[in-house]
Length: 54
Ligand SMILES: [Zn+2]
Image (cartoon, rainbow, N blue to C red):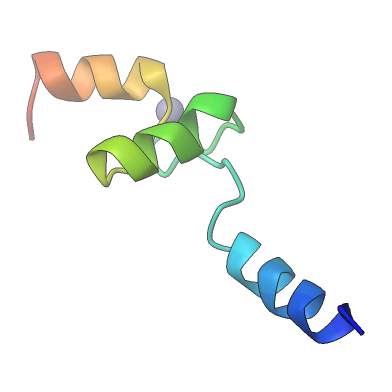
């Protein structure tokens, strides 16, 4: 009975694949930064973005 919900959740997860948009590397911090900062980036890219804002 939960199959439909599962499918919907999986579709949403396509956006949350933990792939950094800057360096294209997969990192746990990517989804955290997306939630906290709104940027889909890893911690190392976040640091360089903070130090050198584009
Ligand atoms: Zn990165």
